[in-house]
Image (cartoon, rainbow, N blue to C red; front, top):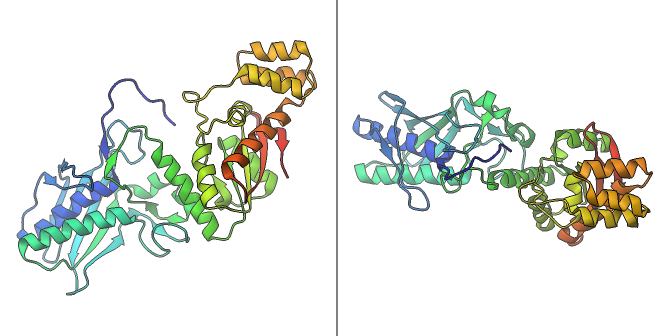
Length: 361
């Protein structure tokens, strides 16, 4: 995750809000022959943002409008992307239907909020666009029977930087957003993706999933257990987001893989492993070294170490299995959050991808 800048941060708008604005502008142009620019919409919590249009194209039976997504100060991969919506007249009584345009993906796996075969436009953005169309239809005395095609310019390339390929969403990005507002540096988007990865793994019948703190740990765990890509959960620092969701939506087996320092913190009871939100307790780590067979000199050195990595090096040099003890503590902490029903093993991995400690079946 990018480093959060200091000071007051500017909020932004989700792809769902941008698509709603473009859909509203296109429908109004289809109804009146003129595009509103800027176009103003009402979000689920009552905000009324206005969006400038980039593209304005009007034909006899359809209209196309686009807006540029502004994610505010959030390091969102879709910041600056053009969200393009075409609204076309449809058969009487058909209502509002949706189609994926270029750059928007199609769902291919079960477990996501929309079923396989559908465009990757989440339920809340669909509700927002439908409400906007129905409101304008009532205002202009028209039937709300339209096909709404949502695209993202360059979306297929952008999607490669997201979780979509792992989730089985092919061909582009998802249109997302529950409130329509992007909160800069919010953890919620990452945790939401963790939940969706678990949902897809369960829906596709996987019985063993693995969460890792980073790419090196992920590769090591995947190779260790021979797991498919769909079993790998991009946990990052959000151990709590993964464990709490698995408590409610369990799978038979979970592997947790990570660096020594991250797993020390998990063993201490931290569920957010980011350095700004949890710290290694070196005194507690020294006591753990003693429990693992370390003598007084080693324990004093561990207590005074400037980093978890230094403490691990001291223990390894002394032949003390401190990483195994850390793995056991991390496993116990994970089991306590899961509250039964999931078998857990923990793998401690160094920066080179080597396994230095393990605990569990």
